[in-house]
Image (cartoon, rainbow, N blue to C red; front, side, top):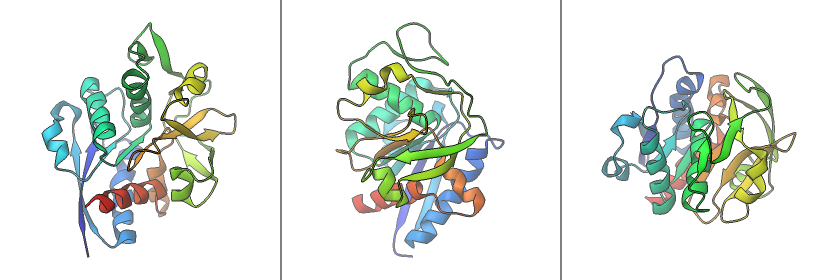
Length: 231
């Protein structure tokens, strides 16, 4: 093995969560694909600290919202965005990444997540149809980081969520530095990225579930490749 990565998995671990079962397997598969070793540490949100995160090579805000320490998760995402640390967010991590960006880049201080807050700009709201343990086709923007990771313009992906981007705000969210690069077949937002960041990708779908089908998770591989590039 030529290299080793230290990875931080930010979230409140639940053995019953399908995504939490898949994540270690997805990392193991990616490490084998890249011919490296990877040490992944689960960090409960109540134990988050910037000093701790700074020692890791990459950060993944994993599914499982609302988190025990929502403020800490928002701070973690902001730090990863501003420091250039490779960042991956899935499901809840996607939702919180969108809110963090809206608040701190677009200066929508009243950006809210309907699951935890009322009033203000409800940027994350209940989906028109629940996606708990559902699958569906996701389409990718050509030459986006997501499309390049997959080597394709679409994929069948799994979900476990009831909340997503409010369509009323999707256009405005994508008018600054954030790019919306993945959609479902109805055109609703399913993935975002920051092109000017070394690697900042967040998806509502849980790409890590591929590992449960004994397949590589392309975004996990790409996230770890970005971490290697920074070493």
